[in-house]
Image (cartoon, rainbow, N blue to C red):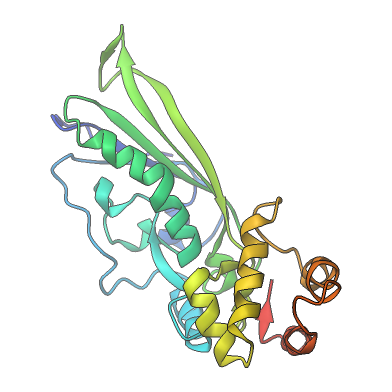
Length: 259
């Protein structure tokens, strides 16, 4: 099922394909196909007072950390005419949002500035995390973003074929109620949050470096995944004592942190 609007758009065509747009409106998460086309003169907007599904759940987690772990992230970036409506906002981590902003969104926005070009932009929530639709189930587990040109006979054309320029996948860890998601903490936030938990700045930076250099999606699968690497490379080489590790393990056991 689709919803299309035809219009003359001298700045370029921007549209987003939401695999879940109707789900947000009708309150279930079975996939539907919906296309929204925004006029080039439509101005994007910050989240404001929007309260998309899962946002209350996200705010409760934010209160556990000394900072904004989760935000209301635009699927269609506000710099690409994305509105602040609930269907365009999802609870995503600041880390995930920054990765999107500094990569594919930034590239598309640079192209948008060249007004003779006609672009398409597509963001699809491929999978949600398990849970209630107003809780963890509202958080995207994986989403795919792509953009490119609409062209016909070598010229930009609103009715032309898609010529994909870039596609990227993004993911975030399963959120847990009132528990801090270690995988989703950025370099500055992790120091502040870990400090509040009684962990040293050095330990926080070591953990962040591990995340950054992790070969599989820059994430630990669970505490054991972290433990094996840390004990071998840090404690085993006496670069750090075991006290922070022991406190960290206790926090995991008490579900104050999660991966």
